[in-house]
Length: 146
Image 1 (cartoon, rainbow, N blue to C red):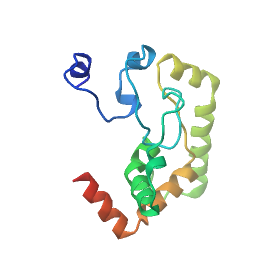
Image 2 (tube, rainbow, N blue to C red):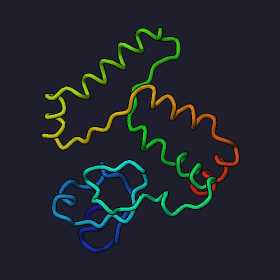
Image 3 (cartoon, helix red, strand yellow):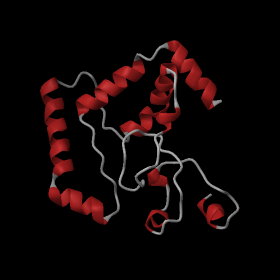
Image 4 (cartoon, rainbow, N blue to C red):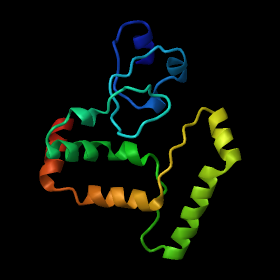
């Protein structure tokens, strides 16, 4: 698909920043029309609107949040609910410390790996919200994905 875009055979795609060749950002080969996530990232220029700015009805925001939760979560580490809370806390503290470690951050930067962290508590809140999504919102999201 990327080769087809570079050849002019396709006009564009809908994807994540991780799926777009890094050189396209550096060489300004792309125009980003809209962000699907409200959070900004350094690769996306200022002024690129969040798709939520175009929504009017609260129900539309609910559907958008449901459809973008996986992107917001990224690649979480999960464990059984039977793991004792003190062990969960130790792991959460360790991940937070690693994500803030200057050597780790520098290595990620050298390898062009974007770092965006979410605490375990924030991830749990997001998942709880998704798991308690009203049926009508799920049905509307399902219709959009058809």
